[in-house]
Length: 346
Image (cartoon, rainbow, N blue to C red; front, side, top):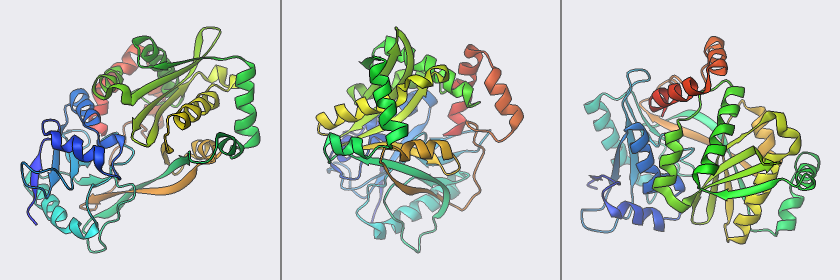
């Protein structure tokens, strides 16, 4: 089987494949790829067995991450919770694996990484398991009453009712005002967790490149934003990608309130499931929070060639001194540091 490469940002066939393939997600959309390229300067490349000029029948997309800090590599895809290879079956992986092996040797990349959600590699593949996470999804096919009854009674149901009694105000859209509210809360949250914030331009580019597929929701009390989420929409799935809140106002239950709004509106729009995103295996608090919404949890494992140890993870460094520094940096410096360093993380 002969393979062909293409630029998914220039070849409209890629977006057509993503629009029609049942395993495609928001992370494979051309808009997501364009936001990655525009924000971080990554080169995008897609691989297919379809000859030029014909509609794509399969595809595997990558970004090239060039970094003197974390090493240059090919990733499918940076900052994406998962990225499904759009292949017919695992038996086709041999030709793609041969290409990856040859390109790895040619470019001397540190490794090539795949982030499949459900695709399984052939047992004889040279790909090896790397990092693992939990992925949570919520089925929206039951009635709203059934979904609500599936929530933890004390930690979710009661808190949603508390938020409704508090008469929280609610806004939804992609305006600059909502983006500013979201980003202020993101800065608070990242500082609380001693992590650098993603650069503001990343979210601006997401909105510009993905249009109505991106939505920001903000909950406020007496005119002051207390919680916000950013979601991505692709066909029958909504991805809850980013969430942030003011920890001084957690008693108002802004996050459960927003997620219930997301569920109600997604259900009304005919969405079939909500992807609650990946969670580190050791993050017991976040795992428990997602479990309490009646989600289904399963393992998500990334694959690499050649086998390599987990590289530096600048968004969550293990050094206590670095985490303390991130927690006390002024807002402007923290945002600038994020803009400079995030391109090395992907």
